[in-house]
Length: 161
Image 1 (cartoon, one colour):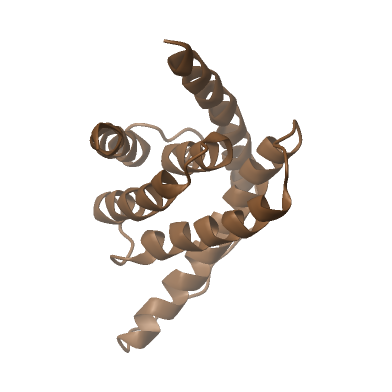
Image 2 (image 1 turned 30 degrees about the vertical axis):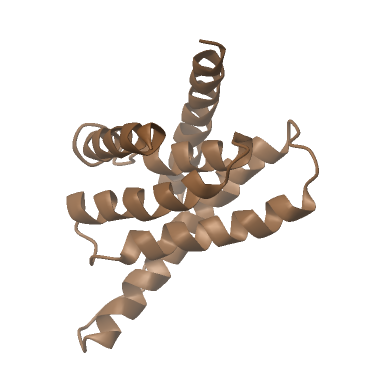
């Protein structure tokens, strides 16, 4: 229970940082996605992954201009996809972690665009499908890779304490 309370506050502050302060070259690193994927890959208990998916998505929905539920659905889809992938992976190796961050970032942006396109249609509103494979996405992938290695080493250090 204590772990979930700590994760609640961490997710809250990370979503505030992500949506407020960090905007370099009009690209934001996705702190919550990085924490989510890092914990999902390296934690033995996968229950916290779904908790982070729902709560992190909720915080991002609240602090961003997406329709409520858009990033929650996106994170739950990534959670389900990663659970399928992790069933087939016996041991986490050097390649799985960066590949999951790269493809997780691309899948996050792609599915966020598709869901942002579909949800307004349900409420009979106009929407435009926008997904660009451009330099901004490349920078976001690089940000997330750097953040993921920093997060990994911080978690590794905290486990020793």
